[in-house]
Image 1 (cartoon, rainbow, N blue to C red):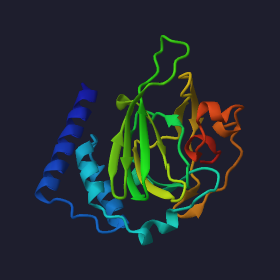
Image 2 (image 1 turned 45 degrees about the horizontal axis):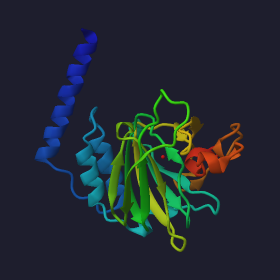
Image 3 (image 1 turned 30 degrees about the vertical axis):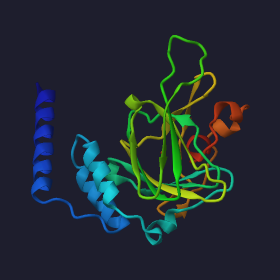
Image 4 (image 1 turned 90 degrees about the vertical axis):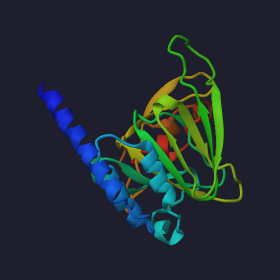
Length: 242
């Protein structure tokens, strides 16, 4: 009964906050800081309204002068750069993709994942989950998408797995990702066999400052056959490295 009472109170608070926003809608975010503060208000709710977050992130028009200090590139892999911890409700991260760089095929640890392209173009390939009843089988592609500047996309584990990549060999790309709840482990998948590997995700920088990398043991990049696993990004590879 006590648990039900807490849930009912939580639902009532959520409804009150939503009604308050309906009566006094958030102003359109003109700056990255506006976006961060508005997202903190939206994520006061216990339940996430995906459409509301998508719409709000879409309203922010990218300005490189605002996110430039978070845009730290690496010649060998894409980078994850923490912008804000969202009062513990979410992580907001700038991902920087060099020419031809991409992620491995991965899940999202039962979290919501929102992605907004800040610069360049990113390609997404989605895959179905591998069957638990089969030892080895190539992952099945389900959808492909291409996202340009200011586009917003969403995925969660019920929708499948995905890989994101900058297919251009002449231009870099930058994207803003929101993960709720935050996580530090993901599953990385071998495209040819469906085998999975749980790996730690860390940050290349935090709040605009480069992050030191203490030794945390083997990661995907340090495994024997990186080409086979497809785990070639900072998100799934680098020790304190969506």
